[in-house]
Length: 247
Image (tube, rainbow, N blue to C red; front, side, top):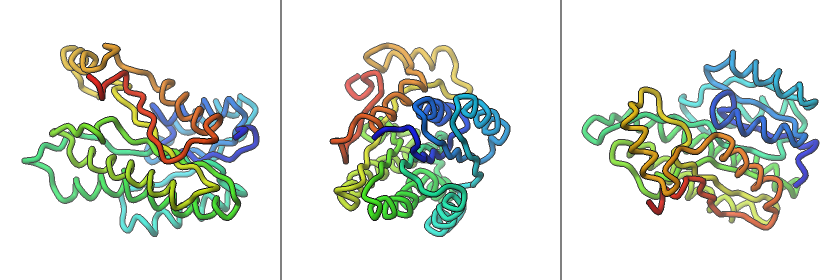
């Protein structure tokens, strides 16, 4: 898929990995729809930065923690399609992440993880993917996580939500074939979590085969590959984890 002239929606686009993805795809000539929740200032700065590349960018705000996720996703999709004529690529990047030990996890924690990390991406894929299928063209990229395959006991609801999104990726690839390709990217340790001590950072880095953290641009390049170059790939996951799954 040539990216020039394509309309690409990226959820959670204002910071970190989402920001890197937006800049990577905008640099290839795509029009970017930037979703954000609380990070309005950063989203505005990113919009201006993208526009300096000679392409258009749109901003849309939404909090994905509410209920019911299907109705929220439907209304969100309608809002997007009032702004732009179509969505050619959906990148489901928005996510929440925080520790939840088994002893302390609450129903609210569980609901938040399942809504933001699984239900909303699924229903956005439903809303946009069915339109893409009618148009006989489109791509969906879901950002999962390497812990979907090796769940960490301190982050179980998070890992479960990402494992569910990986299962959804494969199911959506079958449901939307042959015209829509659905794939996922599974980041490993990319940026240290807030509050990490030097010892904790070293332990995480040592858990990878490459003995270091990755960078947001590593994920952005993987997404670009799946969107721009991988036209005979669907229903698969691309781990970008420095070898964490083998460590």
